[in-house]
Length: 243
Ligand code: URA
Image 1 (tube, rainbow, N blue to C red):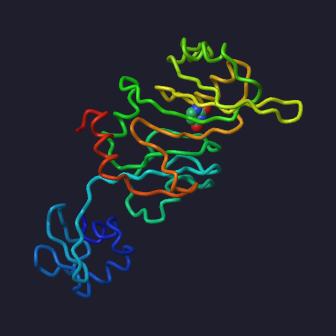
Image 2: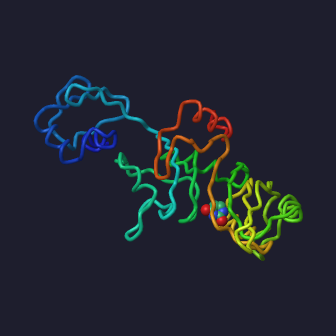
Image 3: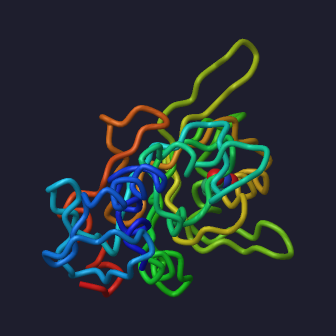
């Protein structure tokens, strides 16, 4: 990899700032000053930039509290994406693991670890995802039973058994609304909205609380993110068989 790219991906500066620093002789690789921004460097070599060691991280993991109004995509010409929210982002290989709808909020994992992403989304792994939802109408014991049995949503989708818990029934004027939590083990397109649609209800708000061992961090406001902790990463590696 080019030395200017290596340094910019590690957040040492913009490509143009770094090119200038390299030409001025402020960067060394394994003790030798490097003056060509196209110089090829490998992770593992000892890189100093303005005297500061810069190690290359091969894999990075971010936990985000996705806000409503941004799309879960890597880039889009018209709409803001979750990756636009990672201001620190300098690497081009990040992607969100799974999709939340534009109006869905909550936990989203963003990484460049393709194998981890693939395993977490694999239908064979059945990673649990817990959502909190505000739903129109009064969710009842019959709905709970249907979700638990594996709901036939439409021709394309018969959902795997899902856990549905009723937390609160609110009266809003003449209308009833239900606050519920749902745990699903798959992630089909608009799955939760379609499941409630199949029992005659509409999802008004949806927030993801967990994915496998990851929990939405209450310290993260909507739109904020942080790196995964070592403990979270270890737990993710365990459930994906990458431990
Ligand atoms: N189910 C949905 O309907 N939407 C989401 O964003 C996630 C799960």
